[in-house]
Length: 494
Length: 127
Image (cartoon, rainbow over all chains, first blue to last red; front, side, top):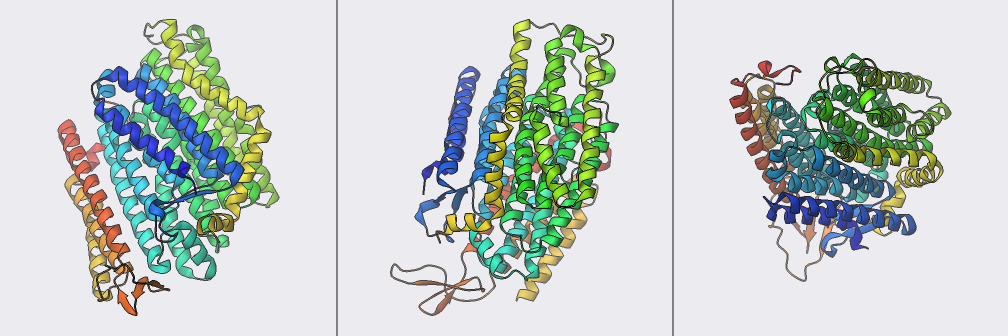
């Protein structure tokens, strides 16, 4: 029992409320937001190291006995996600200070950002299915606000589609939770998992599992429910897009991993094979979508989809190494993808566009930007010594060990196309003759805008060089995920 | 009773799905609202519809969870399961907020584009 598990949520909410009262004083809001994000980072690192030393941390709200009260429970995977969320919040804030226009910044940007963080962190720490639904809603309603903030043409149009899709998916989520409650008369994840384990042949669980799969697939942009993602992220302001691209879909992936390693694990030949098919199709169609695009942000948006396929591939294979690969890959993807979106933002600051037809030859004037992009891009494609190589290697090794040659081939082909896309961006945007307009900015201003992307690149390199400790962490996390009994015992206390 | 609610839930879902798939914006919003009403009713049914005492307990009563029925028993009398009602309350509040937001967003979109036909809101170009 430790109050620490609630801190990532409470700190986000508290900072958000404080920021509401500071409305209109942007410079004070900036300082408070900065300190809040550092505080979140500190709290989530402390929490994860506590989990590392003492096992899964559990707290029941109001001291109710376990199946009745709302449980908060953090294992290594959840702890890692809170750390990543805090890192991305920090770098996105640094970029938003430079890039966000004053009108948006003034109008409740910072408070809502922290409310969204509260939702994100709550979905990582909660041990209760209905609470997970509430966390999703807190996150989503803030994300609707941030996505449509400013209301320039495309934002409203795509925001509406995003909203309608997510509202419908939330309804399905509620249906799935209600059905599960009808079958198990419990909402506590550990309790539900224990009851599911007692009746492994019950077909209801498979049915409800598929409903959950549909819900989290639409939130996490899996095949065939990914169509909303490229456009809605495309129109969002860059600092916000970097946060969304990194975290929001990954909350869906996290929830999918959570329920399909804890509750729905008794019919794996059906459910997890289905996930494997979905993973392969998501990868392929995402990367094909990216190839067809001719715009910096659009290519990156489609690549989010293809890479979510990799994460689900590890879940579909369902071996300890594959899940460790998933955990590692999620960490790698969040860091690198956010960095790439920030670099797209820096490019847009310089040229005013993200469309390759409107500019080229940035290498001449901005070599630092070009090389940062090159390094981050090949990290995404999976070239050593960056983090992408080791996470993909683990996934591939797991696939080969399990004899899943089909998905192994697909993942290799998709990696090749990813490299192709990154080279394409490099060739179109940075190589070639200088063309297009350049906004005049001071070198200092440019360096400050580039800084968050550099921090993320440094983290990617650190994860690549420190692949061994990172992999040990991922293996420990996957051991907890592969043995639902560890989680159940930690929560139920028996 | 369960059959009746099942039929009503099915009807609400059918109408809601039909409205969601039409091209008119206000119909889509209403379709979403109808589906969420259907869901609320379904949650109520998932806690089993039965009569009994309201779930208000005295200080000394001993609570026993009835396995597999989703109900509680105290001193041998069966109680209505309070959890689905608490869930619906939360779901209604959330649904209310989201619907309000959709209305505002739709209104702004119509103002911006001069149309409420979703077919005319397609395309990539960044205006």
